Length: 296
Image (cartoon, rainbow, N blue to C red; front, side, top):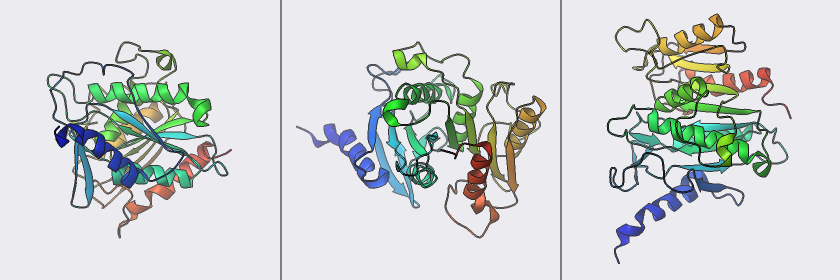
């Protein structure tokens, strides 16, 4: 019997223990109870992971999952956030844009939900199409299990980095219709996040023109308020964050906050540096506090 047959399970278990953290209350579950919508057997290789340049990179995700990082009951405020790591829709930067973020949220009394969405991009499908199914499904699951997981179904945000920021934007602006046939009772719950935290979100504007949001970014009066952090020297244009912020303001969506820093590049997550952009977690915490998300 070949060991390779058990590799996906062993790898997932190691990621859970090593990078998610050993927490007796933690729970990981697959998003879909049966078949994953639109998946073609054998289209992607077995799930794998490697650390390169200090970054844990998970690839070939075909069975998306959700890992719960529960806040300490003594400090929990009922707010929860779905965390979407970046990786160009090709891999997932699962630690510094994932599990580390959930641990930070726990320090604020917020329950973190780490989304392992499907990568890489599927053939003949929009880059965000398959991940959006996973994000919408995850939001429904969180609301459906709100009592069990001790969170408020009306205080559920989404936080994303780079491609995960793009996925968050799509979830924030495409919640009117589910992107897959409903599966069970969890899909009866709303898939609209209550707020968004967007850190260097990608694919919002054309990299050359940078003068308007791409057609699939459909901001409306019903788009939830958002916090943005970006840098001017990022290869992913900061104009995407600026234009989405301005569109929200123009449409009368209240409570948005935008930070554009001069330096810092891309992909830093929460890693400290000499640049002021490293203060974005404190700014996001202040914003969440001002919006009431951190009150018990």
